[in-house]
Length: 433
Length: 94
Image 1 (tube, rainbow over the protein chains, first blue to last red):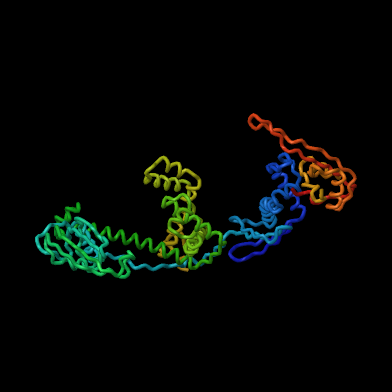
Image 2 (cartoon, each protein chain N blue to C red):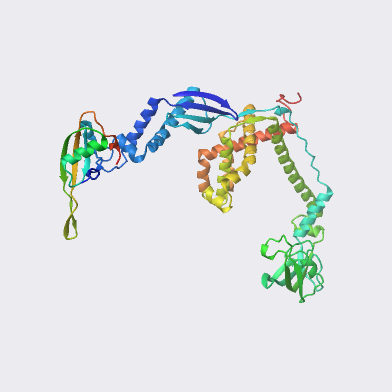
């Protein structure tokens, strides 16, 4: 075997491997011995056909290809040992010629990650402030939720809820046919068509009305686009939405002692939600900034794996066993979709690699105990406990949990750095350089 | 009988493959072919020198088809010895 290697872009090495004639012959012979046991050729007992006859029978190419299937991985393994290469994934093999055998193996190597000065990363966030206006808006929402519908004896107004019988036709074809449909009279609504609500306004209880509306050209049902629609509507009931007064009573109906208490609670809740949002934003921005500073180089096969995993998850989540079924369902070819997913995969990989590197630099580790705790937490939420327990005990799952925790911790650290709260106290490095 | 009609096909079996070592080649030949005709046919077609021709009539197998016994067709096999060093290369295929 002759090998020479050259480094090519994206953390890959190209190995040019050439097989010697005797290696080739040896493998061919082995393959012949293997195949002849199975080949049944008339005139010969099984396993007794001479090589020439077998070659004629199954074709010389078949024998050759069969032999290559053995020889190529074997030579590849030798070459890797010889060149002291540590591949992270399977190599891509390209044949230059088959006889004598020369082939090229493109070996993906460990990704290279160069972190920037991530200790200097600072992210500024808008300080969280809950104003009286926000509280008021939240309480207004609560009012809307607790509103009651009361029947009224007057013509329809905007913002009323009406019960209607509706029959709509387009050129004698049925468009809509509902009985006792509860409809909110809202002149901004496009259901069933724009302008429908305006036609209802002013109608009395029990009144019948028929009118025509034009269906817009961009309507979702092609058949009806641009045509006239005839409506026949009977109003059977008119209800008004009544919002509760904002007072202590209202607060009590929401399980609070009085209005002041309610306001306080709403404010606290809003504050917590906003804090959580800004915490997430900080983490997000911190990662982005650190990734921005870093230089990441990885072999393209990573992207393929990532996309594969994503599609598999997606398919499983939607209840398909095979990715192909899923693709067929959403009517997409794998190639197209993969191209679309590529930027996402790239981002995910870069993030992961950067986080891995940071955790390595910072010596962040996750103990088995932490994994156990997390597993218990997940188990607590799970519905089918026993199955979940089994699932959680598998090494792959544990590893995945560990990785998630590790990344989580790392992001926490980055967020601390970015907000400038890290390093106060014992750790001094990197801060205030 | 025309020379072209004499040789029907080469016989490739375990046994005939072994016989090749002794420069003997085996053919299925026309039922009416004589040793002389076989010799001439082999010499002309493959451009070799024949030293010996042995023929055997292979009896057709009898099979039972219900109550009747049916005999398959008999055929003639010729084992052709060549002068040492002469080869028939076509022989590998069927």
